[in-house]
Length: 347
Image (cartoon, rainbow, N blue to C red):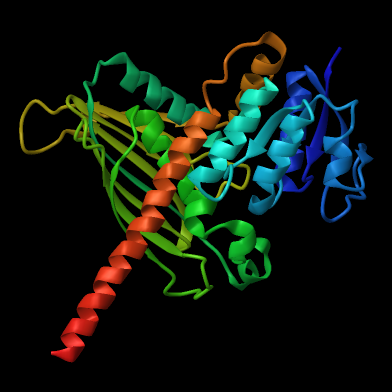
């Protein structure tokens, strides 16, 4: 018998998740809820979040709500004995993730987070090559992830810090930070960052984040830029190792706005200083299978009892700890700069 699913938040992401679960075949969506009551759905529509959380006929809750509702809805669903799949971000900070993990441990149910980029074919190939050891250890990485937004953005919940928890870092940058930790097999404890809103000027909603980070245990370093003032959509993840490099440019999405998903791979050149482009191998991924793979991974955990390996609460805690460090570092830097400006002004 198929597991019965309630989808809490039946907008774009909720519909994508419903279709992926339908294709997997081991779960049946029976009820949905959205802030704007859906009128074009075959599923039964619940009157509230609580109606799904407390529905004894629902085995799985899929949470696709505005950010501020992720933590309380996840905790409530776990306490009600449901398996939970929740979109990112898990919460607004690491302390809140620890609250979720306590509820998870007490419930004994499956909890998985939608760090969807881990399931992209190009990322999967890159990770497998790194883990093989054929290219040696990772020395450093560079990630750029940006998009263009217009004035309509100001009308959405994403422009309200009380609902979003932050700006482009929470919205999009979180994926790149998660990939740094996934590909590198580490986390970063030394952080220097600039967090700014120079164009949109939305209180508490940053439109750019520049950061340089290091794992002081291994010496691995990364350069990071997340932006909504790039005026085009762009995804680029570069991984440089002892014996070569792997560069993933583009991301295959339904909108097509990030271009082709192309992984470029090359071993170290034998003759310095000029690289030979002929030595590069390019792999192009023309179909986005990430949603289906993610649904399969979740249902393997629910139906077969396999461990969640991609999107665990521990991984969510790691990325939120890193986000805390970025925000805290910027606040500390701001205080130093302010003090210096005051000192100069009084001189």
